[in-house]
Amino acid sequence: MLSLSAADYDAIRLSAQVAIAATVLSLPFGFAFAYLITFVKFRGKMMLEVIVNLPLTLPPVVIGYFLLLLLGKRGWLGTLLNEAGIRLIFTLKAAIIASAIVGFPLLVRSLRIGMESIDPQLIKASRTLGARWHDTLLTVILPLSVPGLLAGSSLMFARSLGEFGATIIVAGNIPGVTQTIPLAIYEYAASPTSENMALSLCLVSVLISMAVLFLHEITARKLARRD
Amino acid sequence: MNLRMAVNKRFADFSLSTDFTVAGDRIGIFGTSGSGKSTLVSLLAGLQQPDLGEIFLDDNCLFSSSRGINLPPEQRRIAIVFQQHCLFPHLSVKNNLLYGFRRCPPEQRTIDFDSLARVLKIEDLLGRGVTNLSGGEKQRVALGRAILANPRLLLMDEPLSALDDTLRFQIIPYLKSVSERFGIPYLFISHSLVEMRLMTDSALLIEKGRIVEQTTSEQLARIRMGQSSVGYINLLELSDMTERDGMCSYRWKGGELLLSASNRETASGLFELSSKDIILFKKHPEAVSARNLLECRVSSLFESGRKLGVELECGGGSLVAEIVPEAARELGIMAGVTIHAAFKASAFRRLSKSVGNTIDRE
Image (cartoon, rainbow over all chains, first blue to last red):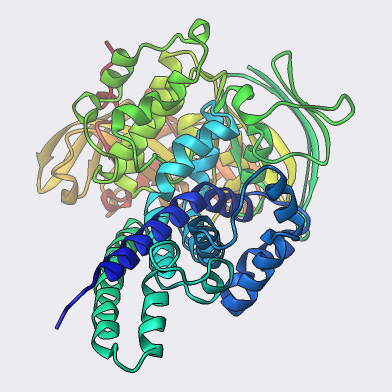
């Protein structure tokens, strides 16, 4: 029953591309945000947390719409990018940005849980042994955040695979260019004769998601065992 | 080592305010939990910042609110041995040991890695991860890691309280001899008077965030005898165990002592005997059930709370017994008189086996 067309393979490839790029792109920022929220005391921390977590509660369509306003031809950033000859709207880049923003809170959340489980005494020990703060960051916090990093990345990857609302608004639904698995399914679902095609892609989606979630569970368990 | 700490630090429900100068290489900070010991350690190491004041280590200013100086922890060269070993779980024993060493400027490195590993008996552990080491091994590695950072001062923040009794007294000789041998002065923080007396010469007593007493650790033990429910703890080094009449006979510098048979496994070691377990007789009691009866000379008396401490010279050894003032009057106990001290064979508690032999002193 698993019959996939060339366009379906394109959609799978694009989905993987978007999910990988969004995750990789978000990692350094996610790490920095999680570090700030966990270890640094500053004013307006709660505000930052709220902003970072906003995409978790906002409808993705709203995020997509804001992105369209920001990056569109007459948008605040879009005009600047347009002058530099860069066009983001209705490209794969836009799909990546949309996925990155929607999945970002999941990444930060997992990283934070990982960082919060690091014994603060280890950080103190490293400082008194002569490490400056960035040395401690690289040699103690980063290696001990790896399980959180893996857990967060897998969650974010899975979320990016499923991203629909924001993507369809900023990247459109262009087969072979921006059409990822959910968008392809949406298109199949709209036509009465493509039920099987839709089901096949759904199955692919389920398989990939399950694989990623298994990976996530395994790393989460490793994280728990370390404590 | 010369340390001056005149600082204030205020928290919501606690404030620390100290102004003291101490000199020496084996200094103790004694206080119950919540007295401010750990805050003191954090302020000294630079992990927390005082609100006001100055900290000087030898001639070096670590912190001064008036001059706007606050050296970050990595520049203070004050290493800490924590209560929990705090080893980096992602690094091997060797890389844990070398963590501080690699960050110490080469011209300041004086500790030789191999000889330290030998003294701490951790040569065979170097390639292993730290998570499956035993408690004692972990604490030895943590000590080695702190020493290898070539600190000017070693802060031992209750390094023994996470260990069980047997292990505690096995680690003490390492703590002492390693710092002595490599010439690193230390500040030993503890709530145990026995540890204090084994580890330090002078001690600061901290209560509710204030230094209330600056004295020797021996004197501290005598001052606290009156309030303590366990009395003054005599520490006796006993050796050459032989079994006799179902009991264990040990050699002590003040004479032969009999201990109960449960000590059969211990050939020699450190034992404690409470001042409360010693009964004094003016004349030789003809018959007494206690198995140890020593003729002693009273060398001095000291007051401690409502009790009187009696310092006894017995042969080459000395003991402290406690009595109430009325008993001293009735028995005519005063410095110079000869009396008899009796204590049961079961009154001893073993602290460690063969303390002196644990360390390779070569």
